[in-house]
Image (tube, rainbow, N blue to C red; front, top):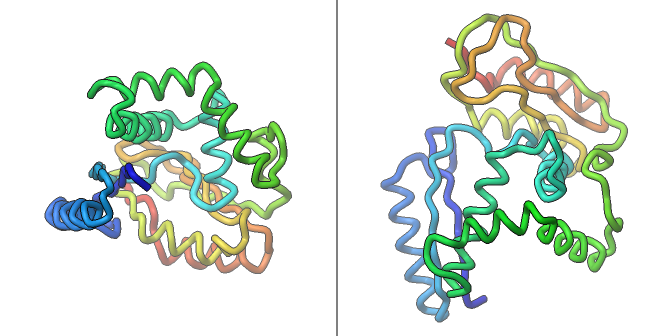
Length: 221
């Protein structure tokens, strides 16, 4: 590896809770990269919630495929962040002028080149050729969590997301995880869908329900 871009999500419920820690980690990554003659760029991203709506192996794969296939339900925040990171490495390598990387990456997503290349990688690794994003999730058990009151989403707890997903069987169960229906700062009404749990096992779904009751993901005020 000669060029490396590292993304560090920074947030209260993330592994890196604040910019002070993020800056310290950035210095260590850059110093380590120099020892191996690598050009390293660290991008620190404020993370009030996960990028995209799917958390869990298959759900995240569906999110990625929706972006590169330009599906109408794709997550634009995931698309923009992916283009930002891809653009950063194009600039780091000197492929384009500083500030032009994002535009180039975005163009390759829009014109289908990104999907064409990803499909080649999938096939080379023994995966299905031209897989449809909407066929990634197989037969699963589902359960919806609804808002118990009206208000505004003022905090999204990433640690609690991980706890619920693990109880559902992720990452061992590739279908397990959650799909979120609301975002940070969004206004919701009592009864609105907050997220849907996915798992391959009825027993795991029971565990997921218990975990969801104890680990509140969306704090509404």
